[in-house]
Amino acid sequence: TNTYQIKLVEVSNNGCKDSITKTITVNPKPSVGFTINNATQCLNGNNFLFTDTSTISSGTLNRNWDLGNGINPSSINPSISYSNANTYSIKLVSISNNGCKDSITKTVTVNPKSNVGFTTNTLTQCISGNNFLFSDTSTISSGTITRKWNFGTGNMDTSTAINPTKIYSSTNTYQIKLVEVSNNGCKDSITKTITVNPKPSVGFMQNNTAQCLAGNSFVLNDTSSISSGTITRSWNFGDATASLTANPNKNYSTAGIYQIKLVVTSDNNCKDSMSKTVIVYTQPKSGFTINSTTQCLIGNSFSFDDTTATTNARLWNLGDATTNALDTFSKTYSLAGTYIVKLKVTDANNCKDSATKTITVKPNPAKPIVSAISNSQLQSTSANSYQWFLNNNAITSATNQILTITQNGSYKVAIDSINGCGNLSDPFNATKVNVEEVYLEDNEIKLYPNPATDELFITINSTQNIKDIVVEVYDLKGAKQFSTNQNSTIIKLDVSPLSEGMYIVKINNKAYKFVKTNY
Image 1 (cartoon, rainbow, N blue to C red):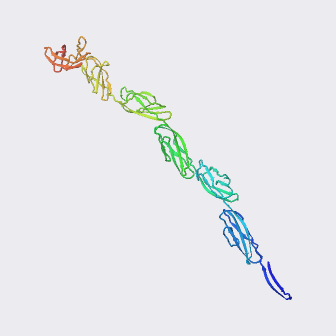
Image 2: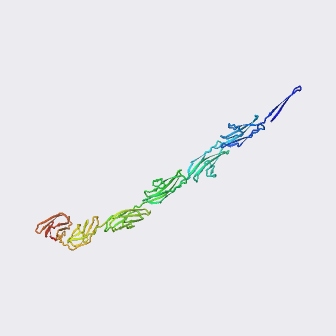
Image 3: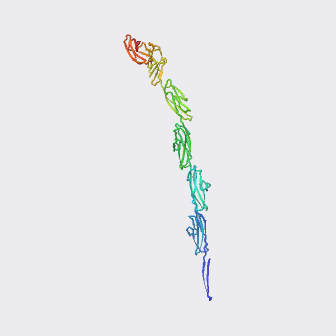
């Protein structure tokens, strides 16, 4: 390149000359060139930096860029980020101020990135039995990819498997990162968060593990806890009943062995459970019999018999500040009154039961006193009923307060009060009885006393049925004084209206004598 003088000399055939000179210029051509920061880049984050290195020996330059995607910047050092993976031709045309041009073309490659992604069976699990299943769903338009998992517990906790599994030993929130690398070294990554929730630490206490059926009450105290969050609980008592309260009390209606199960659930639905066995012992059934619950004070003897099926120990409280531990025994009370007898039994499981009965010791009436109101009559103190005895033998039909006696001997009277209890008098020895005994040949008839003052008794000691007995009284002149019909073996005649003297008594036309006296 330079400026040159061009001279043309013309010479005619006559030797005439002439000349002309002109200047021409040979302009320099640009020396075109450019550099690229990196001719091969990955789509993700690509940024191509082009630097124009064109020169010219003189003059100035302009340039035209063609970046291969329809973009033609005029800047000296343009840059571009491609949105699609491809191979692009980059052309730079340098133009001098004299219009001299030169160009250069270079190729850049945008390698594809993977379409990274993964799925997991669940994003939230409980620590107990957790097992996260990861599945790589990444794709790439061309080439191949490799992967690397980071499970969020440190740089060493990684995997290159396509579909790895992971079990966590601690509750936490973990960042799961999958990095995909193509065969061209292009990387992309995706991060997801998973949570390993704590499980409750289940526990409960109860006041005891075995109780007797009567009054059983199992007091349950939930001691469960959780490191974070809240918990609810569900009790199953093993008898088709349940509760949702924290500290329930459970009463069983039948004896048996029961499994009490507590299930606690966190607000993230993590569960744990615990079971314990409790025993409800069969309750002994106390019972006893008494020969008679009501007796009179004199001669009382209460016989007690424990009828409890299974008894390890027993204690009787007899209601009068005395006790007994025997199975069967008798008790005599020293005072009349009402007593509450209680039997408390204890079985081998220390279960107790008691039975109570009321007994009554009725007071006896005061001992009757026998007194003589005449030589032939005895009288008892007042009572509800009477029974007279002669020489310790009961006198037939002698059941009145006053007894007319027919012979000397030892007399007693047994009385009953209105409550049915009796007493026996001390003996009364009669020694002044004046009775004329008149017998038939078969010893059936007895008249007494004779002489008689106000009353005359006729006793008929017959084994035959007694009825239609005709009794007639006559004086010695044969005048009938009175008559009566009787149906009893003891006949009492009122002879007080009669005058003193001797009279004839006819009993069914059989005659007997007696004397009426006034004193």
